[in-house]
Length: 524
Image (cartoon, rainbow, N blue to C red; front, top):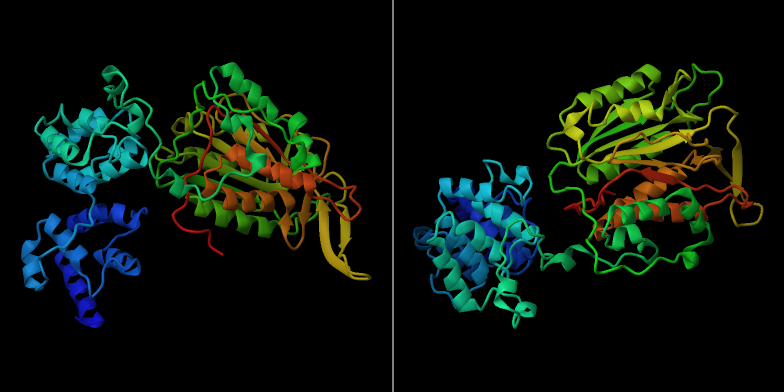
């Protein structure tokens, strides 16, 4: 069959399949393609992926035939005059078994299964429109089920429909025991706990999502060490305070962290499993022309563009506010407070403006205390953000004295650069409010300046965006990323080496923040 004729045949198949049948094909191919297929919305998309991997061609349509046979479309195979004989099977026995289970689970059974998983999966993954195959994929993704780990699957299907156990037992008989190799030889009672609320083993394909090992300077005990008490957590929280972060100024060679204690309880992570990360408010104040004491903030538009790009890539819905006075800044936070965050994983607020001791300034020169901004998002004022991270990133200029310009020269002789660096402000000493789940990352520590480059943006925001882009795909948690930002900032200086900057994170987080790895690369 010619390639063009084969493409026409694939179009016929596409037109003949229902949406549910298309999703069934995607499920059956998830092992074959070894990637997240949640963005595949048509059969054509799936066929294109299979062709790119040389799994489907005009010379070999056996995979297409196998898939159509599994979903019981034998008549379509005959209508297309495809060869029904299969020399081998490419769909894994595990995937076939799960599909057979799904064919025997009624709508009422599915509701009961979702009820049993109430304490295991997030509620958004148990909504009415979630199919049984989507549920299976989510269980695999979270490590509750794999080809060699069927305990949880048995525990949720047997009470609902005992006949389903026969399908699982037949699979186990033909493909070996479901007990992992390291469990064999132990006492039987040790391997029979199939409670769906127990902590799962990591998924088998975890390595595929972690493209590289974390750099050595990210081996911070807060993120790698397992803790046994709240006191241990508080002890590690203190390590990120100014007294420790200043050590980064000497470079990576001076970083020394204790080895992880493998016998303690691992630090939990905030739930970041939703398709929508939440709202990200960016307040960008540039025009201070109506305020005699303060200069316009050159370069802040570059920071805004960088933040929009990286936060949108991470799954946030961007809300922008430009040139806000004091009243407008508070109104923007109040509007954010009144939004529905029920389905959100967290919330982000970025403030790019002039600052003063104790707060940030609107374009009218009036001060807003950081506490005023942050308390609008606490659990009392915004119940839908209870127990969810509230992340503030503050790039604030001092605004009290005239901004000091530093002209940096290139390394070449007599080659003067016209790049301007503006000194930014001290960070307010009183910043983070009482209450859990806050993080405030500020451009500089108290008593120090931060720099904003006219043509490239601020050192802090640019380093933050760069490190989010580079380290999120490696599964690095946010506090470790901010530690790397500190490391970068500590190495920056003007030509004379006398002007330096150190950013400062403060937090009352109770868990680690690990952003999901985006499905697509960061846009250029």
